Image: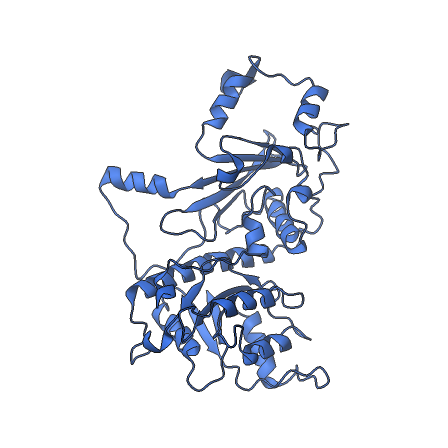
Length: 417
């Protein structure tokens, strides 16, 4: 993967440039990073358009040609430096290389906050109309007391800080591969999230967005319940038994039909405890109702649904941004088909695989160790294409990608310097 790095300072002695150069040197086995120079960028002035000057054109081409961008920002008066804001002004005026580009933010400062306020502002700037970058949610690397953080060779001294930086970079590599993959989808715009077309199993005459859709629809079709038997391909169960079975499977299951209607989830946990939060009132809703009404969110939903519908891949898998040493939540999406091969919707399951891995290690007496030569592969599951969690509006993962929540990391060693 090819990344470019931008330091938000034009000072001769820039610790943020030193940080970027360290990342490029230390993790060259994971990723190829080119650190760009912003020293020659002119002061932004709409009345004197210099978009075509060499400095701006070079930045634009380098960013467009990269798989992602790492921006290292100092903190000046509780915000980003003027030099960095100036660069973003030029790159969101007549040219827009940040549009849909994955961006990771890091930062170093003299004080203990580690540029936290500048990083918060930078996220907001990068998500502004005209910039439209897609910023890695969470995973913030905040390097404080930077004068004492590096040795004479420009290397970070503290190993815990280096380890946390590596985990953050690995998360960004996964994130960037996902974002770039869905951005390559070109035939998604006609994907209808309103579920207005219906399908042969759509319950007619009932408002699908009604909070009590389940009760109304069940009454409309005389749905069986209780101790009525249902003949399945490989079993005979009552409706009660089927519910017992599904609600005790220790993963979160969701069904979205081929009409993009959210019609089922196994309600085995309170909403606030779920990995992908869902509510009974959402059952029956069209996907454009259960997702936030944000264009970037809906765009990515369409892209991924269309990827599954058209058979570009039949399995979507993605680790959730923000995983740490205690959890590793993964969302999987499987395209469903009938006996004739016709697309019949999406089967989603969300699971924290960390307890499963821990149990395996305990039972076998093995342990996980870091492989310093490993190249991080963002592709999980059987799919050859890395994907993103966007199938149900009940899940908030995509919203975090398109409109990430900013959470300052106070647990990493980087924030303790």
